[in-house]
Length: 197
Image 1: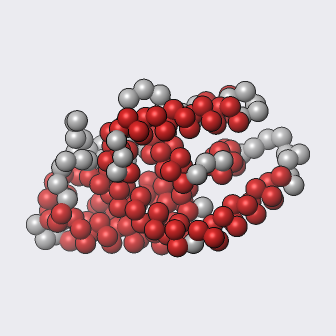
Image 2: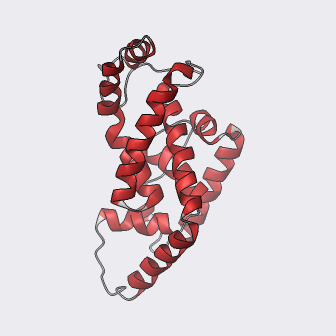
């Protein structure tokens, strides 16, 4: 597996050298990591947790955990995948803690959406939320990491602690499920799916 040392957000930023600086004791260098990953980590948390404030709090907690554990990081996976693994576990813990409330809230949003089905034009954000509400937590994580963050199946497997073939199979089942449920023929969702390795 090829390990990229450049940031997806800022290709000129050498993450490896910044990580080495932080591991050597330069805690201020960690601010560059936060700047680089703050937005994508927040978006990942937001789509898993479904709440802006919780996503902001979770993002902060994830960066704190990242700093606390950066001395244990080694390049067996990309730094980005390592950070997303922290985000993955943190969000799962939060979802488990609020599971009853989470089920109530998604049910409420679905009921509310059914009362407004006369609206023909959806904003892109509405389409994404509609799509994500049809998925369980594992399916959401795979879809977000694959389609939005553009991770390989190997990286997603590392983040979620699964086998790459399992992730690939789940992703293909997820694609088929959403295409089958889509009553508009697949045109709205088709662009959201990345195919290939």
